[in-house]
Image (cartoon, rainbow, N blue to C red; front, side, top):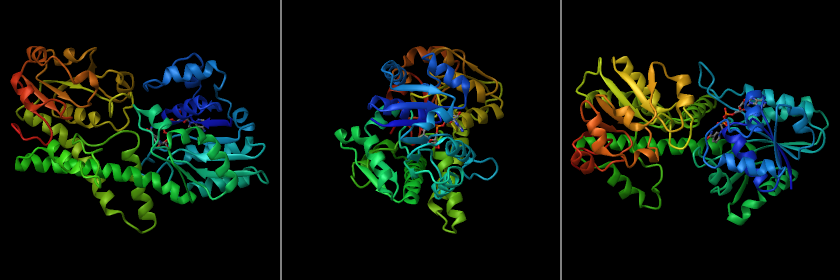
Length: 438
Ligand code: NAD
C-alpha cells in the first residue's frame, strides 16, 4: 500500500485517484476549487464519467479515498505526489500554459517532509520535469525528492477501464528509488499484463505528445480520404475497413467525421508544434494536421448549409450531440462549437440536445435552445444534424423524426446510419465520405 496524493481533481486526477484507491492505495485528492471538493465530499461527481460515482463511493466508504483543499496536509505524509492540474493552451501563442504546474510545484516543495516521488501526470512539454526538479531543489533544499514523468493515456468516456487496463504505463525516470515507488503503485496492473515502460524523463514527456499527434494524424488522414471519397464516388467506411484490417495500420481511429476536438488533441498538437519550433526541428506533418483539422470544423458548418439548399437565414437547425465525443460532458474544443457558430453566422436558429453535456454547453454556447430529447430537436426544424455519436442516437425512430421535421434533411456527421435506411425513411440524407447511394 502506498500513500498517494493527487494534486488537481479534474478528469484525470479524479479518475486516477479513484482507481489508485481501488487498487488498495491510500489516496488524498487535492483541488483548489473548493466547490469541487465540497461536491465530492457530498458524494456528487463534478464531471460525468461512466462508473465514476460508484467507484468513488466504494473507496470513500472503505476509508482509502478522501478529498481536501489543503495541499500541505495532503503532501506531508505522501510516498508519491501526482501533479494532475490542467495544461491548457496559453492564450496568444499556443504553448502549453505551465503556470498551474509550476504553482502546484512550489506549493508541494513547501509541504514535502520525508522521501517523496513527485510525478507529473499532466501532459507537459519536454523539459518541464527539469524545471519542476529545480523548483523542488530551491523550495525544499536537502530533501529526498525524485521528480518523474508519468503521462496519462486514458480516454474520457472510458476512463476507468483505460486506467485499469492500459496498453502500457510510461514512467520517465532514471532513479532506482523512484522506479521502486512507481512499480509498487502500478503493481496491481501486472495482473492485467500491462507493461511498464521506463524511459528517460524527457523521452517520457515526448511520448505523450508523439502519441496524441499520431492519433490526431490518423483521424485527419481518414477525414481527408473521406473528402476524396465524396469527390470520386467511393465509400470511406469501406476504405477504413480495407486499410484497417492491415495489422500495420490498425482499425482504430479511422472513423471519418467532423474533425477532432476535446481537451487534448487540439492543445497537444499545438504545443508539440511550439516545442518543435523552439528546437528548430519542424514537424511538418503535424503542422498540416492542425491546419486541416481547424479548417474542417468550419467546413462542416458549410456542409450543413449546403445540405439545406445553401441558405439557412431564418431557418431552424436541430443539433444532436454537443460534447466532443460520447459518454462525457466535456465541451472543450468540441466540433459542435464551430458547426453551431457557422450556422448562427449564416442566420440560422439552433436548438440542441445532448444527454450529458448541456450544463457545460450552456457556459460556452450563446443563443442556443437546449431541448430535453432528440425528437424535440427535430420538432419544427428545417434540418437535423448528428454531431456526436451518442448511443442514444443510434436507433432513433426515423419515421417519427421525419414527421416532426419541417423538411426531411438529415446530416449525419458521424456516419451512424446506413444510407439505404435513412433514404428509405424518406430523408434527404448527407453523411461524410459516402457519396449517396454507395
Ligand atoms: P481539469 O481541468 O479537468 O482538472 C484540473 C484540475 O486541477 C482543476 O480541478 C483545477 O481546479 C485543479 N488545479 C489547478 N491548479 C491547482 C493547484 N495549484 N492545486 C490544486 N488543484 C489545482 O483537467 P484534466 O482534463 O483532468 O487534465 C489534466 C491534465 O491531464 C492536463 O495536462 C491534460 O492534458 C492531461 N490529460 C488529460 C486527459 C483527458 O482526457 N482529460 C487525458 C490525458 C491527459
